[in-house]
Image (cartoon, helix red, strand yellow):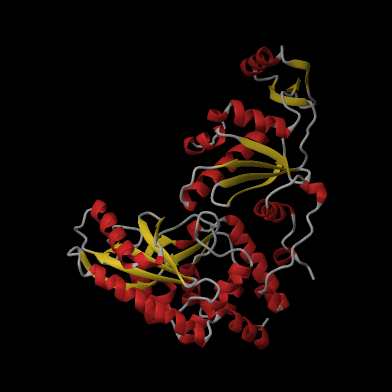
Length: 448
């Protein structure tokens, strides 16, 4: 189906910066570039300074504006000096704008100037493919896209970014595991337009490759980096975001509605599901978003696995940080309580050694033991836990070392934690996460 021109026209108005916004951003960019250049010239280890990211490629969108300035170092510079001098240049050049350090693979300096984010990022002056740091590819990405993208393609990249942001699939950070700005640029480069991207995604097959590579990759979608054909950009995108993109793309192509570019009205939280939701709230010692999100996501997965092993049916889980020091792990269960009886299934009676071993191991714990119609041994036993909240509380309080919660998080849990039901009183951020966990996303699952 061909997209309606009035929908695309309105989407462009949302996604493309106005003349006034461009003027303001250009002024800040040139001012900061001059300051960074001045500080970089004092350092013999610096080769050059470049604009990068969405500002350099003219693919930035109005609601979140970042200016990335890359400082290229000689490849002989040690990692210690690379970080130390990179930070010095960042802090000295942005000193009047209250700069602070952010962390990726290497630290970089960031500041906020009149609502515009400015990042001073160190990278090495290397040949294509001979990467020394994670940021080294970025200037090559900028050069490639500046050369290959037409004005219409840049507009469509902005539309795609806004479409993904409003529908919760944009952002490469661990908290989101969505599609990055660069992935949006690559998709438009390969497929030509916003419409073509959606048509491709709507019919996407599992493990399908977009682009060409001599290698095979295992991920739900494979997106090849055009400047590094051995790199799969799709590996960082979660299966949830891939499946959501497919469903939302299909619905948008059917409906052709501008509502897909506007904030959604909040769904009413179903109380029946809220009462079957457990939230583990705790405070954490401040660290970078990527580190804390990596830890809490792994913790949620481990606790979900252990609850399932104990007999509780966990339908979905999530993890969130908020207010800079608070974190929550969320679990939606089929029911918070289960039968006090559990059945252990053993081998069939024809397996002499195994069946004898099973009888010996389970006879004292059994309330009843029998062989079923297929000859398999069965043992009816009493569960230790019938209530998921009690189990989770005991697990974190008394058995945290075997819980799969990383060492880095254990100290935070030991200072205290609370487990609440989803229908209890929660902070605004947690309520939002509960809503996301227990309500249907109409943009993905609407049948109208």
